[in-house]
Amino acid sequence: MCGIVGAVAERNITAILIEGLKRLEYRGYDSAGLAVLSEQGLERRRRIGKVSELQAAVAADPLLGKLGIAHTRWATHGAPTEENAHPHFSGHDVAVVHNGIIENHEELRDELKGLGYAFASQTDTEVIVHLIHHLLKTTPDLTAALKAAVKRLHGAYGLAVISTSQPDRLVAARSGSPLVIGLGLGENFLASDQLALRQVTDRFMYLEEGDIAEIRRDQVLVWDQAGEPVQRETVQHSEGAEAADKGVYRHFMLKEIHEQPAVVQRTLEGRLGKDHVMVQAFGPQAAELFAKVRNVQIVACGTSYHAGMVARYWLESLAGIPCQVEVASEFRYRKVAVQPDTLLVSISQSGETADTLAALRNAKELGFLGSLAICNVGISSLVRESDLTLLTLAGPEIGVASTKAFTTQLVSLMLLTLALGQVRGSLAAGVEAELVEELRRLPARLGEALAMDHVVEKTAELFADKHHTLFLGRGAQYPVAMEGALKLKEISYIHAEAYPAGELKHGPLALVDGDMPVVTVAPNNELLEKLKSNLQEVRARGGQLVVFADEQAGMSNGEGTHVIKVPHIADALAPILYTIPLQLLSYYVAVLKGTDVDQPRNLAKSVTVE
Ligand code: HGA
Image 1 (spheres, helix red, strand yellow):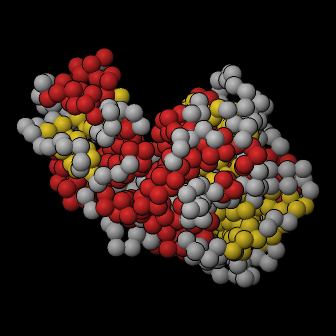
Image 2: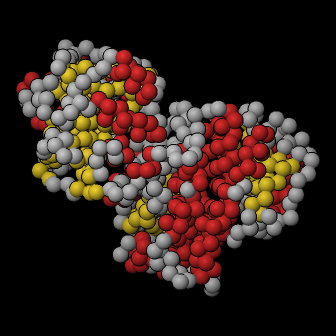
Image 3: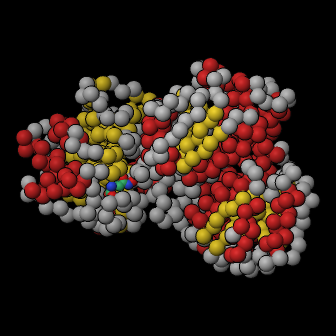
């Protein structure tokens, strides 16, 4: 979603702002802009499209200044036009960039129009800048004006504000949308994600919910939600800067697909004992809490929701624990009846996913036993607000279409299944030791699956000219089929739908013909024979089949049937392994179609708005 970068320094900061925006490009956006305080006063450049357009505009008509703010916008209110791009100005005195949504913008707009303000955009954001401008008339201090302004705002925001009246500072506010201060020597920075500032510093101060900050060259002051001055911890990030580099790969997505053996290894490290999962990996109180768990409720969105659906099969079949899974945007607005002793598990790559975070916050009143976050970002809101955490340790994921975050979520959820089963004594004898052994072998298996790259690349040719695809799976491979379909639609824009294979003849079979390839994720268990019958139903209607099947399942190519052999693996871990060739398939189809693989249209990386 939108990105914010800000800087206050003794040197010209335009290039720093642009480089910061480039590092946030992966989050998805439709326009970009920056404003600096130059010798002429507040000046800005805004462009629709890529940051490179903005960079070209600045090169053609340079901007020099030591104080500035910049933004990549993913439109929520008002079309992606230059007028709606941030920064927004009030006169030539105040400039604002904003991530999030101001829900009471209409009421504020009417009020501010009544005070004589003219609006230049359709955004919700513009009310903020005029409100601050208005407040500055009676409260000349910018920080004080911001403090007064946020009291009037309903909704979510990460804000950065500069004003000609106080050229030595940048002020910021966080509520529902993350912000981090980058600490330099005699210069300081602000961003919505530390990745944007890795070019200038490795020392960061994360703002918390409700914080207001005043950032000057040589001083940073922070006030908490109650308005009290606070000292936020300074953290040093020594690794991870290389994540913003594609290395030898053509796209971040391909790089991240290939990172999976290594990141899965990292997710497992320190969490496996000789023949058991280390329950304390979930936090010091995990054993006590897990012993009381009788049900699990999972909430998540998108790819993370699919990981949750796989976990339901595991939790019920291996650990005998009833589990429900729901998309967070539904769960948060529904009147939920909670079973006694239910653990709420939220799953999110960024830990800032607006709906998942709101579901967790609402759940606090619903009587859950406790909450566990499965998350990739240790300093995220989701982690801070949950009782227990298991970090997925996938490292920064830049491609908008999630890959390594998904497989590490699955690994984490398998660890959760075994940990809950262990504490509750509900696993069948020997299962934990056997799966711990299989998990140890998993990184090597994933490496073997990556070796299927060329076969899958060839298969992708079958899809490049198609408009629709069906994905089928059974059991825990059904959510894997859903994830495969999601990847394909996200990056190649081919309409793809996933069905449990048994549902085929209850409707989707009507769509099957020679123009609609059917991708099948075959199970290597008692469901295989049933699936083979479903495949016959497709073949009988002239449908082209692409079947991902265990090399030991005895399936082979036939007329209109392309079998892609996947390395053998224990049935329980098959969902993790089969995900790899499906990721590769969507990647190569997208490359053939020439779409923007890493930044697909209309999508954003971390969905911090509803
Ligand atoms: N509501 C603002 C900012 C949108 C945003 O944060 N997207 O992620 C706008 O539409 O400009």
